[in-house]
Amino acid sequence: MVLVGMPDSPYVRRVAISLRLLGLPFEHRQVSVFRHFEQFRAINPVVKAPSFIADDGTVLMDSTLILDYIETLAPAGRGLMPTGAKRLPALRLIGIAMAANEKNVQVVYEKEQRPADKLHAPWLARVTAQANAALEELELAVSELESGWFGGTRLDAVDVVIATAWRFSQFYNAKEIVASKYPALVAYSGRAEALPEFIAVPLD
Image 1 (cartoon, rainbow, N blue to C red):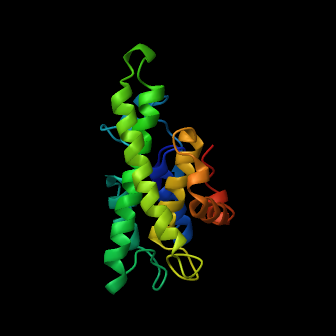
Image 2: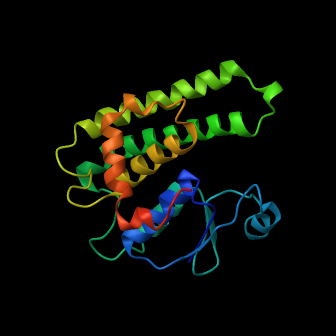
Image 3: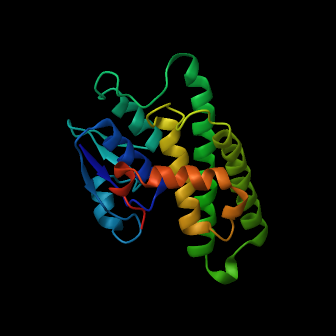
């Protein structure tokens, strides 16, 4: 199996860390959608990160769909996605974290990809507010944790997406996402980033 994309993407990093937590062997090709456009297009003409090449050559994209497939390969008892009554609350938090990612990526693109004279301040303010709104929801959820992780004694899919979303926000948008507003997320992220599976996939 091959994961294609740069780990400075919260979506790529989410998949890479999940694969490691599941103990599934894979190759990580760090191909950039910006710097290596043609190389990426040869793998996936849509040029979307992450892209994932299954063992039979099928190319998947979208981190959530990739992880849905990966769960089917997980050894018994090692899956990351909650089941039963825990699934619905997990889907809610994953959706919020993915919204935080989407809005933080939009903030990055607005700042780094749009020419300064074309920057649209009202749009930047809007997506920044949406990113903060999502992270406020996650801050509340993390602050109410009764155990170390949403998965209990081990991380689950919720933990991975929340931790990677927070780290991405601070790496690129620390000015817009002020860490002092999110003490629970800061502490939670620090614990996650100290784990070997996270250390093995550095964002920078």
